[in-house]
Length: 314
Image 1 (spheres, helix red, strand yellow):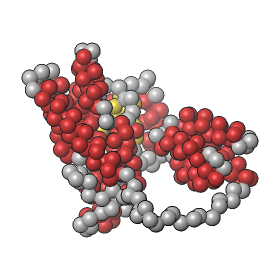
Image 2 (cartoon, rainbow, N blue to C red; image 1 turned 135 degrees about the horizontal axis):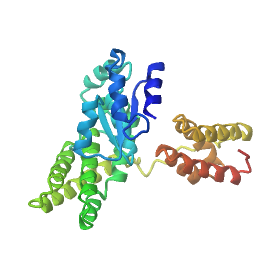
Image 3 (cartoon, rainbow, N blue to C red; image 1 turned 90 degrees about the vertical axis):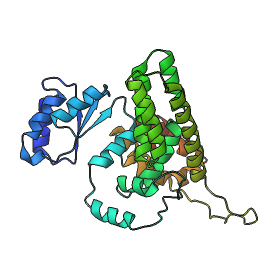
Image 4 (cartoon, one colour; image 1 turned 30 degrees about the horizontal axis):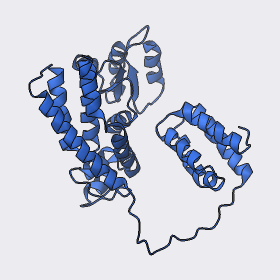
């Protein structure tokens, strides 16, 4: 409850607080006001989490002293982007100086996607090329049918959902460095929030066209460039798998997933080559994708299937 949240903040030096607005005893608004009364927590990032993402609710969050708003159901990419915006790495200034000084920055194979500000997005990621690549890819996977979802919501008379869909595209596009896409979505969001129908069809058409173009550019940038066909791939030595070590790593991963620990991603990545050598390449890819999407329960199920196939007890 909210009173417990206030007590926890007083006892521990947190990097940030995810504040549920609807809690018993003391709601998130009152809890935030109470925390802000202590000068020690004047700069502590407090991010609201509530199912209501409309403007009035956001205003109430800001008035109570919260820094930003994360809507439920949670979009994982948006969650991470908001965290990156407010929770600063200790070396943030150094990272900014290094990134800003480069005229051209390669981001894990993403280089100068037309119409995208990759350098600016990289700065917002605290210099993490891996996170930026992940979020650009995630945008391509989750927002391809955004206009279709908006139109479907409107057909059902659900303007609130349609507005939220446009808002999501606007926020995600802005954070990954796609300003034209963000502007198109912002126009649609504004029309929907004001319940204006004049010009809405044209705005949706422009948004759909830009979304399709951006998806194509992202897909082209993320597609690995293969070398000349005449050059055969280097023959790699066979991977020798130590079953005892593999068993220990699978059990470690299972424990991390059970605790919803983000370290699970690094452990899962380290399993790929060995699982592939044992004929579990596709299963390993599925496992890593689930961990990457923070679907930890589903990842544990997939891990159990892999362990059973390999006759390993977790």
